[in-house]
Length: 179
Image 1: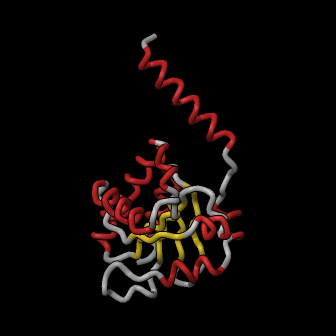
Image 2: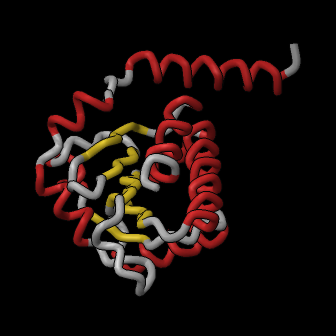
Image 3: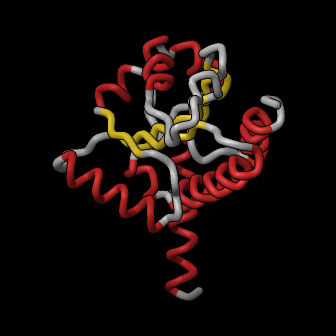
């Protein structure tokens, strides 16, 4: 067996092993644990456009850049963003934001780096930074997606990567049921 094939097999085994020991973050269990302050924070983020969107659903990606060292997670996230953006263009504005966990770099440097990465990845959503403490306090241990509905309830809370079924569920919740 070639060295390249062995490396790929080893990488797959490492990812499978890591996933087996990662604590589960379920939609129902996490949504119950998340404080109302998280919902209020999400709803107070400024909209990407001047359109009044205070009564729309809000989709917030809480991201730990380190999680994108996992190629499956990164590709899943980028594919989902492409789908969300395509649906948003067809059906009107939806509030979608990217909230990254602060790292040890200067805030201005981190923000500049994230904007360049976002542009290179063809992502056109507003970017915000929040402290690691904020992530810990609200039970966000992995890069996650949180959907807050018009009633300010968390209706979707999943970690990345999402299964195909969960992606469909999210897109339906945002673009089909909201009509």
